[in-house]
Image (cartoon, rainbow, N blue to C red; front, side, top):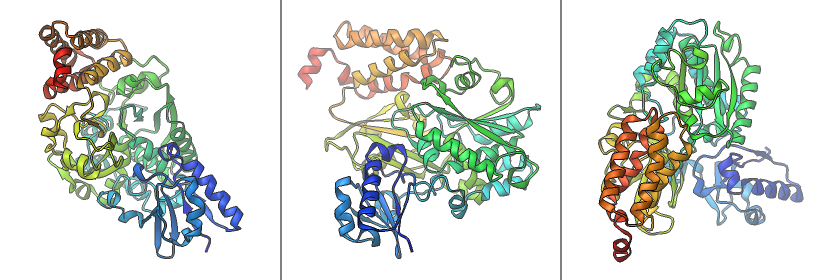
Length: 518
């Protein structure tokens, strides 16, 4: 039996040196005259252990990590190909605590096999959901997705089934499925991991959405900063088309569905669904006024389902195992699992898929292992650059859409950025305003002007100029932006600003007082 060596080829692992490790292993095999197959899988998401190399042995897979090119020779000397012990030995991958504690539904296959092998995808349960869907009436598919409690995993948490039903019930000769893969939030990489590590699950989810709503064409809108995801998705679409998963007769059924990959220029505002539609149509990425809703009048004026990658990638498991199975995970109105992305100043950064309900403290302290610097955690930002900063006093907050909303926070795309006690929250508030000013599409005044004035006002606060007056002005600006902006860019910028002011008031004292306090 030819040994199989698994080395992640996704961009997260590549950034940590996986390509150099792969070349060193290939070189070592050649020099020793050993025949082995190197499989470039996706990452399992434990990025603090990447590059993580796995070997298939008679007793199952054995992992080693983080492997450096300088470790390769000693790995082979230690009996690496048969799971021999070495300083980088981690044992069975699914027994590694970070991975063993997870509930993997959407990411069940990610990091296991060759992402571009449709046979490997099918051997791990892939296409079962689509096979079930093509045998069902569209309304029954929509009902199953609705009953599962699946909500948009991109930001607002809107029920997926309601969007689908609106498109299904709208009469039109042409309908579209658009996947929002414009993953632009800080500390988020779940979409990228799926596209690079398990692309067929996204294709399957989009095809089910097409069958359910009567849409025959799909687009995946990926930001240009994701070249590996673009390349992998393009290859996967081609493979799926040749295999009859896509085309005029999906899996031999009367349903037609095809899709293509489109690359955006990387504007943050194009993560907002109507800006994304404008960009897809070849126009400037500017927010559209609603109504009409995209579900009624979306891409090219036709009924359009817009979901993000994780929402669509969660659909196959629902169609395979049933609504009740999926709904059994989670809490309150937040059902199923959520891929939490842990980043920033943290010991164990990576993707952790779990049912809704873990507390923020459990995620940061137990799963993330606290700060990488060893200093106390000062703040945790949840939901990307427009998410609120939570202090340790709020670490008892369960990871749930409504629970976060109660505390003036939002889950967003479930990215978590950890900061230690050296973070200056006034600077963080300024960054939020500056980010909004740079990324604003310019269509609405509260966002365009409010963010620019916000930067200037916070600069005056930092200089100690009329602190009370300028603090009141920032608060007033935030209120105007929150309720007056056309989209979430301007509407959510107040979350990081106001949470910094509310929970870390000492960082907003005049400069002399702040120096004295330090």
